[in-house]
Length: 218
Image (cartoon, rainbow, N blue to C red):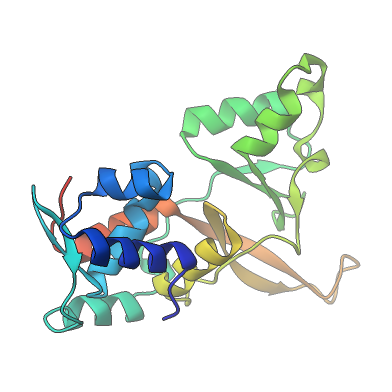
């Protein structure tokens, strides 16, 4: 797989400073430790890094001994790790969307139309940016600020979790709706729509990788 620029920089830093702990790596990269947790888990799982508790990260010795984990990472499908989607309708007010966001403790909400087809995605950042200093905006529907389909990045249940992780990194998103295409050629709304069947998040990916990876330094 093609590593991201940050993952390549992590490898360079580890090679220069090994052993090095996650906090030191995050400081050198100018980010928080949670930001690179996913990258570190992936690099350990793929064998690019080795990790010893209370010692730090080392450059790995290749994928030897990691083959089972790598094979599982490459073959596990999204449908086996996806969670229940947190959905609101297009007409939902921004106030109700914020309430849903915090009650469900998620970073993004999936928006559907009246036929329950994917309509868009609205993130915590979208909501805060619109509502901050503008209390009159609470009654605006989420359809006014959401990222609209077909500009939403999605995955299918048959995609691998590695495909999902790559889409998250390449598109800089935290949540991917899991969708199945629906033929609606008999309707007036277009050739096809996407039915939302689940969601995967960076938290999902991190949990999967932590399950596969050897225990690393905390």
